[in-house]
Structures are given as structure tokens and as C-alpha cells.
Image (tube, rainbow, N blue to C red; front, side, top):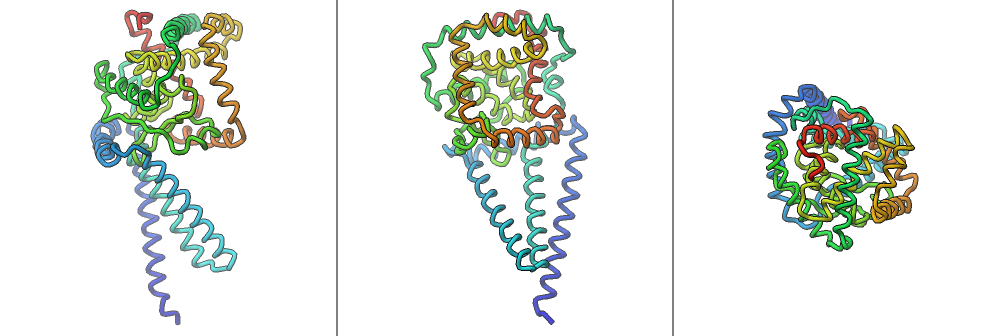
Length: 366
């Protein structure tokens, strides 16, 4: 008789009970996600804000991304665990392999549970249109053209104010933080908790994934690609800090990034916001009528078209199958998290922007 038998059996039972308990916990989180008002009133405005405050105290002062180090550690540990599992399978140590697989399962469950508890439940908040009291009742193609022209005019006007962008990344981050903080004056629902942004340590890698920035839910850190064209950096910083505020959906983060940027005193950030919004609207116009798209594109200043060309050349330089694969993965991720349109969700900021301009008394004055 193996004198280690009973302890191994007990260990297996403990792991099974842990896996079962975590499975039930995840089911409860899924159930909670079906009650948006509960998520808004009890998770976002209380629990998540406490988390943001604590994360800021613990990690906000660190100049580099702790979340990136966490991701690296998780990837390394996962690879080591999978290699050990395969090694035991090859040696026909099936009981030990089963224990390893069970540990991997528990690790995955803990990862998913932490993701939703620390931030991910924000995906199940009521839509931003409801939170911000915007009526997204649809719009006509004529209305789309009207707002697109307004955005083009604002983009051109702000481009002429630039000598060109020579601001350092630290200045870009600070101006974005100021803009996010000022959103509170427009709407109390846009109150931020110590917004901050950091450069991504993975920038050389995420270039090949076509990624401009991302939010780390485990450390509450917003990170951006610090090498991408400078015109993209300011509004991307605002977009990621919108995630930090608790707006998880991509279209909503885009819209809030635009709101923050368009009202900023910083010329580069203001141009960056209008530049992003103009491209989003132009894509929608092109989808509906390519002839109208060409007519509107001709209204852009040569300097703006040059910026767009440089941006396209930058991302095309890194375009590869890794980017296609990561795009497919992220598309599935968005669909699993209350965004059924997947990557097309980004384009839905148009609905919010149209509603904003419809509500505004004088949309052209900003």
C-alpha cells in the first residue's frame, strides 16, 4: 500500500471542491450580469470605485506597468504548467497529469473570476446612452453627412493650429489626464477616480497586433502604444482611461475619448479627437455611399490627408498574420462580453456622437 495514497486522494478532493466552488461563483457572476441596474448601482458606483482607488494607491505611483509584468508572469507560468502536463502524459503518469490539468483549470477559473470582479462586470452596465441621457434613435444619411462635415471642418481648423506635434509622451499623457478629469463638469456620470496612463512595455509586440492601447483589469492601468503616430496617441490615452472609468464597451470608450479631447485646451489632443471621429464617420459614409465619401474626403486639408497616409503606412508596415489572429480572438472576446457586433462595436460610437450633436444646441461651435 502506498503510504502517500490517502493524502493524494484528499488533495484531489480538495481540488475538485475548489473547481466546483469556482464554477458556482462564475455562474453567479453571469447571473448578476443579467441585471444592468444592479451592476450600475452596486458594482460600478461602489465596489469598482473602491477597487480603482486602492489600485491607484498601490500602483499609481509606479512609472512602469505592473500589469504588464503580471501578464508576463502568467504567460510564463502557463507555459511551464502546460509543458509539465505534456511531459507527464508522455510518461503515462495519468493520475499526476490529471492533477496538473485540474490545477490548470482552477488557475483559469481564478483568472476569469478576477477579471470580472476587478473590472469586467462593467461590460454589463446599462448602455452609456442611458447613463448619459442621450437618445440614440437612429439617424438619416443626410444627418450623417451633416455631422461628418462638421467634424471635417473642426479637424481642418485644429490641424492648422499645429506646427506640428512635438509634444513628448509624458506631456501627451498629462494633457489627456487633465481632459478626462474635466469631463466631470459635463456630466457627473463621467467622474473619474485618479485617471492615469502608462506606456506599454509590450509596444514592440503590440505593433504587430495592430493594437493602439489596452486597459489592464488586474492592475487598473491604462497603457498605450508609445511608438504609434503621434496623432493617435492623445485620443487613445483618453480612450483607455475611459475604460479605467468603468466604460468597458469599445464604442463608449471611443465616444468618451472624443468628448474629452474635443473640449481640451491642448491643440494636439483636440486635433487627435476630431481626427479619430472624422475617420470613424468617413468609414460609415463609405460603407453607405462611396461617391459621397470621395466628395467629403476632398474637403480634408492636404495636411490631414498626409497624416492619414502616414498612419496607414505605419500600421501596414507591421501588418501580418499575428494581427489577423489577435483580431479574430478579440472579436470573439467582445462578442462574449455583451458586445454582439464584435470588432464592429468600435464603429457604434457614431450612434452616440450623432445623439450628442442632436442634443447639443450649437454642435458646430466646439
